[in-house]
Structures are given as C-alpha cells and as structure tokens.
Image (cartoon, rainbow, N blue to C red; front, top):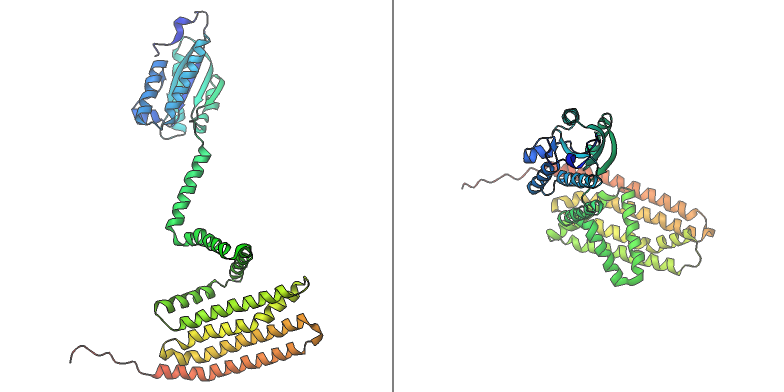
Length: 382
C-alpha cells in the first residue's frame, strides 16, 4: 500500500476518498519493466513512469502516469483526500484484461478504510476508455482525461505518405513516366510554344482519352513495339515509320490551319474542313506505316504479307475516301448525296476485290510455304 498518501494531512472526519486512476489495459508496464498492478502511491507511480520512459521513450503509458501524478498533486493542493493508483491488464486485451483491472480495483476499494465514492480517470487512448462503463458501475467518475503527446499526427502522417509516394515514383518506371514524364513534356511544350502550348497539351490529353475510351491501347502498343524493334535491330523500316509520323503531323497541321481560316462558329463545318484538308496526309501515313511493316519483314514473310497489305491499303483508302466526300457534303450540301453513294459503292467493290485476292492467292502462298521442307541440320562432324 501507499506509504506517501496524504492521509495525515487531511482531518480524520473526511472519510470519502477520491481515486486518481491510471489504466494500462494492454499491460505495457508489465511487459516492458515487469511490474504488475495495482501500483499505489505517488512515489511508486513516479518510479514506474520514470523506468518505463527510460526503457521505451516512445511509450505513451509513461506520459499517462505522469499526467495522473499531475492530477494527484492538484487535488492534494486543494486539501482533498485522494490516492493515485495504476491498474494493469493483460496483453490479450478483452475480457481477460478487464477482469484483472476490475479485480485490482475491487481489492483496493474493499481493503481501504475510506469510502471510495469518486474517481478521476487518466488514459492514453480510446482503448483504455472502453473500461469506463465498468468502473462507473462501482464508483462515480467525476473526470476523464486523455493524455496525448503534443505532435501534429495528421501532418506527420501526410509527410510520410508523401515521402513514401515520392520514393515509389522514383523506383517504379510506370509511375515515373506518368508523374514525372508527362509534366516534363508539358513544361517543354510551354517553353517552346508559349501560350499556344496549352492547346497542344489539351490536344494530347484528348488523344489519350480517345485511346482509352475506344480501347486502342493494343494498337498503340503494337505500333510502339514495332518502332522500338526497328531501332534495336537497325531495320530500314524505321525511316518509313518516321515518315508516317511526319505525315500525321503535317496532316493535323493542315487541318488545323483550315479550321482557323474558316468563318463562323459552326463546329460541324469546322470538323469537316479538318477532315477534308488532312485526309490525304492521313491516308499516306497509314500506307507508309503498313509498307514499313510488310516490305521490311523477313524475306520468307514478304510474299505472305503482300496480300494482307493490299487489303489493309484498300480499307484505309475506302475509309478516307468516304470521309472525304462526307466532309465535302457537310461543307457544301448543295452538291447532294450522289458523291457519297458513289464513294460507298466504289469502296465496297475495292474492299471486296482485295479480300477475294487475299483469300485466293494468299492461301496458295501459305500452302507453298508449308510444303517447303525444313533445312536439315548439319552436324559438326565431317
């Protein structure tokens, strides 16, 4: 029991005692410095808190006991009969730890000659405060105070979250491309083109949304891999791919100039002008890229790629041809629908003919290639 209680300082007729309770529900005190509750009296609690703080400076239960001692000293100055007691539970937080704490409290209440009517609870978190209803069933709780270490928890958490995310960006190639590469490109565009760079960036964003929206990632990835392989293997097809990209840029620039020179705010007419002005360049770009893939492949694959390239060229021409005449009609609808109908009929005939040729002659080439015997492997022996 406490040898330093302030019983001698208080008149004998005061029989009611106020308890200053410090609760360690998960028994950090017992685990770290091998002390079990109840820990009674100011001096014992001060020794316990000091030893616990030296053992683990980050332990919040040490601050909780110091807070309880501060409350105890405040009541002593007010000449109140009081006692400080720390209760410890069990690492297995729950029924087992709660029974231990309540048993320690009941033994103290039944073992003292004073009437315990009130208690001031000091805790270090919500977990310990779950015991308040059980303690309230035994004595009245006049105060419940939580001891929190003075630090900005949200700001600290945010700081480490940002720090970890920054490390992830630097270490992960995919993240670095998105969070470092794209902003870098945007800054370079602003540097080169000035205020016009904003419209270019919006155009790139629109292109990315278009690719994502229509699930064109596989086509773009295939085109990128083809260019990458051409560079690595030093194929001449890279020249055609560069020419294809150049034609796309020229076509987009030509279409943009046509839109800028158009009078009036009609978005349909402006879109038609863009398509009509750039259609030929886009068609040539598609043909150039397809030629690079078909012609500069392996020798045994060139004949096999010839007929698919013919169908591909027919499809590209038909799409551009129809779009051209639709755009021409939207710009000047006095010309009627005949040109569009003619374009559709001609396109269907061209596509049908190319597909017939591919099926008729392409299969023969495949059959001949399969019939060719594989070259015999020569052994190293003479």
